Image (cartoon, rainbow, N blue to C red):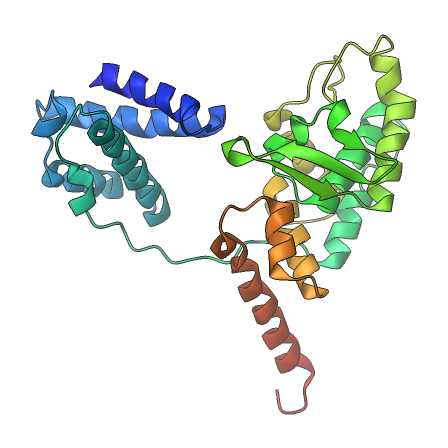
Length: 295
């Protein structure tokens, strides 16, 4: 079964074009699942029963795994068995008979306008890291990029003169995203005052570099946003994705249409973007209750 898992992960890359992060998530999920099958002496795909999968998920629930995480786990298992069926390593897919855990759809956390302003103003100094952090935060809020897309952005993928960037998102799908004037100025300032000194020969391809001149990592940027949120006096536990949520929420709240926001976020399905309409409805309801005389 472990050999089949290796084949499945290779298939995800070759046939589905999934990113390394997504493949790693599948690998971690399925490694635990295969361990549970081995404990039950299930060594061939057709030996696996729906009850094996259901009991594995039940044990994960007892370990404290949240419904959303268990639903993702079942999705990985279903995809694995679907692959085995397609490639004729199995004759049935037992995962189709297992019901997914019910998940309550939670509203994404986002920052209000004053919090965003405070966060963007937090790197106020003239040190190289301040100039870089201002550019990264401004660009993230201006475009709604995922953190992996931000740190993976190449110099050639950014056109400051026209005001847009090209990024490769989930499923290796390319999309163009407009970049606002303020973000363009911040990035241009970073390029002129910091990056050209770090890489005078132009040998580095990534836009944002660490102090050591290497490509910025996701973990490093997580630390940056935590530090800047603390400086901005934001008590909530925010992440890079919070700015992505804020980007989408503020666009919709100011009249952008759902389809345009979907394209800028790189969502394959409009239903993924519709969660932000619930956020704006909640804001309108609270605004009405607090201001209207009959609220």
